[in-house]
Image (cartoon, rainbow over all chains, first blue to last red; front, side, top):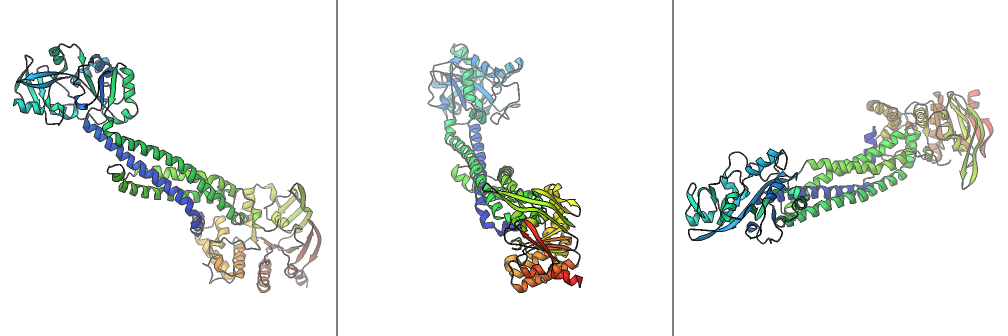
Length: 403
Length: 232
């Protein structure tokens, strides 16, 4: 005979009474685990989607309209290039990269294309580092631009929309431009009376970028005689920072500009994630109240039902500490069983339902076992504590019929 | 030795004061067998509870082996019970989900005995009360008489010097009652002190001393049949 035997025997003897409380905690933990699991993979999918998209925040002139994300800079309105410096010098967290653009129509061999000036990352990175401050003075990278440093393949511009270095005489041509003009790497090309070397013919993207010719921003500003202005700034921001209000922060930094995100592309997914997070929180609250109340109610009833048995134990020499431990151990067993069961069922449900509910592949997350056990055990122990105390304070005289 | 000095117990019930015991004095030497009789509500069980350290008196003191029981805190009183006192109840008070063997092991577990020691002692006691073939039966699988025998085995588990019995034959047929009283006489002959509350005059007569309680006071004390046998 030991404490564990005493508690387990009672649990298995009266398991039907325990069932409701166990189911309450099991279902609660199951729902929390499955929602957390699906949400994690869904958020990861959104982050990947955003990453593959490249820039995910656009800074445009206030009057600009956004009809085509890839052609956002193809309009007459401009903003000062100084905005780029402001962004680069700011302490905004979550800015992974900045790409200012100025575009103008250009005629090459009788065909009209778009000449787009871009500012290589090395220029404003150096500016920020020189000042010892700003977004690029600290380690960066939430996924989007990682791997762009060092030896650079300029064709990454097609996907990443950011380039590390670009000389004044270098030019990059879109796939359609290259095909129509018969250009290949290292060819010479004259644009608006100025000679350039084709550094790379970019791969097909299926966007207006295929009809663009990219040169250094300051060169394009000279050619267009527009001065130090740009049409748009493309920003690669971390998804989680965007959701934490990066757009609002940029808005307050650049109040004269319009800041938009491309979250609408992943909007449905983000809405599902938000709904899942809210649901998860809601279930946590429900489980705390319903599950906790159910366990406490069961425990109080159990103490009442067993008062003669408790009195007998006390008459035989059990002290109040032992009686307290009997009921707390019962609560602990209930919590551990609910936590483990809830984690297992929740994980299975998440793996099965994840692809249907959120359209993502969901894998088991062992870390959630800790969360499940933590919530379940804490709740079960907290709900059992006061009934256990009542049991420990019972009058052993209850063992006698006549007082 | 058990001793009560001017012990009184009063309760408040629906705004009225009820006197359960009124200045009771008693001295029960080691090895005595005392039965306490009296009408319902006369304070018999109150007296037994007080001797067992489970109900503190409003006035007076209760001593067990010269230790004033109610000068100890509740946990030390519990420790005293498990070391020196064995209980038998009218309704046996067996733990329903434990087997006969496990029920007898409870007092041994409470005193911190090893499992093997618990098992050996429980087995020995169940054989002694004639339940060698019912050791792993739960109370609901035993007859009433067998349940009381399990309770008697449990009572002896820690080899107590004092046994307090509350109506031990109250729920039993005459034949089984006889067996229980025989058993109590047997353990009394081993030198244990027995205090038994009973309504059964024949059971009471088997004690060495009979105390009669009325309205919370001990109104008479007479020798029982065993006392005469002992004297003869």
